Amino acid sequence: MSIDFAYAQARAQARLGERLPEDAWRVIESSLGLPQYLASVRGTVLAPRTRYFPSAVTPHTIERTLRENWRAEVADVARWVPDEWREAVRWTAYIPYIGAVDWLAKEEPVLPWMQDDQVLSELAVDDESTRRAALDASPFAAMFNVDSDLPDRWLAHWRSLWPSIGNEEATAMHAFVDAVRAYIVAIAAHAASLRDRREARVRLSRKAASMMRRQIQQPVVVFCHLLLFGLELQRLRDGLLRRTLFNGERRERVA
Image (cartoon, rainbow, N blue to C red; front, top):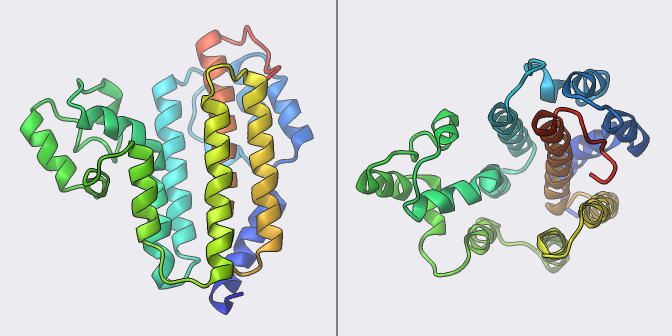
């Protein structure tokens, strides 16, 4: 236990208590079209996530806005923690960009939506040498100095940002990483259905909430909070995109 994380624990626990319950999610996900879905969301604690969405919002606007939501939450959480943990928290802001950065690093064509993103716009240039220089000067440069999959490189750098911690804290952090890895494997499986992915998300959410309650005033608490926030954004994203792309023709039976 660390007295330094008392404030972070209090803030994270308060946010945990504000999370939307499953029955409220079911009401939202019974919405057929985007306007009804947005109206349902705006009657809940999720309202700030969709505050600026028009009824005819585009998929790219949805994606960009939710990435902005994620970065804002990470910046907020970074203010909760002791100084020595701030860089590790801030590094999580780049999680939604791993795939796009990998695409750009492989010298693939710039996609139009990348130029509208605050984080990617300076990297999304057609000239290969200019792009490489921009990547090398960006925070993502830390992911290009080893030969492994990009998510593993992100993880390795994140771990390098942890300060020295005791056995109890380290055990909790590694258990957290293992739980997230198991979730990624489950949702990436070739045979995984939408129902399988939903169940994997539920398992991970319960695991994170349980860890937050058991690991009192430990670093893992803030990362469990961010994980729960990210899973919530992912679920909201799925609902928004499904209704944008399919025009409300499919119910949210298995998301």
